Image (cartoon, rainbow, N blue to C red):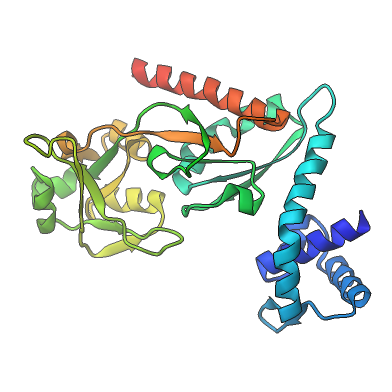
Length: 310
C-alpha cells in the first residue's frame, strides 16, 4: 500500500504540475508529499520530476513511468473502491465530470440532499466544459447534453428537454428595439461567450421555422463589446442593458421571472435534448453509482413536475 500511495502521489503531482495543488487534492502536506517523492526517486534510482521555481514537470523517465502506471493505477483505484463498498451501505469515492452550467443548475441544488442521504459516498467533482474520456481519466460518470455524449455510453436523462433563450433587459429593448429573426442580431450588441477549454467564441444556434429546412439547426456568428466565459456575469451584463445574451433557459429563468430580462426570437429556439448522466457500462454498476443514478432520476422527475406546474 505504501508503494501504491507513492505512485498515486507521483500521478497527482504530474497532473497538477505543483506540489501544493497535488497535496491539497490528496489531503496531505506539501512537505510530506515532497518526502514521499524523494523516497520514490531514491528507491527507483532515477529522477522523475524536474523542479523549477514556477512549476514541477516530468523528466523523460517520469513521462514514461506515468504512461505505464496510469492505466494500472486507475484499475487499482476502482478495485479498492469496489472492495470498500461491500457492506450494507454504498460507500467510496464517486468521481464525476460535468460542465459549469450543469454544476450550477443540477448538482448544486441536489448536493445537500444527496450527501445527507448517502453520507458514506464521497463525491470528487470536476467542473469542465470540454469533453472528457471517462475511462482514460478514471472517472465513474459524467453529465453532458445529449448531443455531446460519448459513444458507447449508458445514458440516463435528467430533467427532460431543454431550450436556449436570447435575452436582454427592458431598457436595452427600449433603446434598440427587438430583433425579429436571427439575422437582425448583426444590428445588436451581443455578449459573446468564450468556451472554457477550447477558448472558442460560442456561435449562437437557431433552428429554421418553416420551409424545407424547418427544424434544421444553423449557427450565427455574433459580435459585441463584451466577451465573458461566465454565465452569471453574462446575466448581470444583460440585466444592466449592455447587450443581448444567449444561454440555457434554466440559467436565465429567475431573471426572466423577476422581469429583469425579456426573451426574444423564441420561435427560432425550439427544445432539444437535455442533460444526461452517462457512464461506461451497464454491467457491474457499483452501488455508489447506482444510488446516484436512482437519485438523479428521482430529482429529474421532481424538476420536470415542478416546471410543468409553473
